[in-house]
Image (cartoon, rainbow, N blue to C red):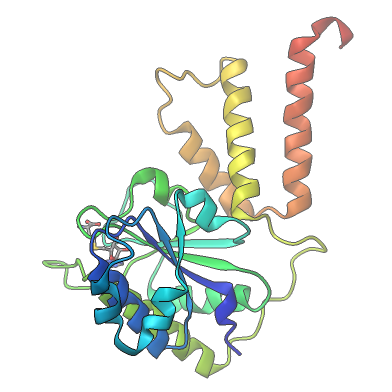
Length: 246
Ligand code: SAH
């Protein structure tokens, strides 16, 4: 059974209200309801309701957030749809593969599916938040779908995966997987300590933090493991502040 209340569709900074409405319609036709908008440029706006047609309830219930952090709070699996490939990247899936994993996780906990701006897509910092990139294998000579069209493709695959009867994953540990906000706090803490011990040069960070995100992303940490790592970092900070004690 699909758990639509656990499947967040997150549109990051959409420019056009018409696309928000069309995305809502794409969602509702496939049984999805939980729409989140991060800093929309044109919302609320009558174009959204017009394009939504009978899905104006999804538009009306949409949650508007100032930041992506807010939209991702509590999500334990975050995937981002991107028309482009990147060189240093988390695993790339097609919508079918992604749908299976998303549905399995959404049986237990919230997941988030990110879609980018009409013109420029998702930024690198936004893609860094994702544990999976989802690429719709389109025409290589013209691969950029309309925003709402890509929501439709993803929503359709979720519905098909649901019809095929995807089962919840067996729990990997007694602890729940780390949520997006826990991971973000871990990365901030790690970055602070790495700068403090001169391992990370803020003037020349290279891709160190991205590589560490990929490393910890592969490890798929649970909530307790994040607390252990945070505890280690806190002790590093303490020993730096009071070297005589150690
Ligand atoms: N020119 C932008 C495309 C933006 S299209 C770019 O180069 O990224 C708006 C959004 O629709 C994208 O951010 C992405 O979330 C989704 N999208 C469009 N085409 C896609 C594709 N082929 N695969 C995956 N997502 C796609």
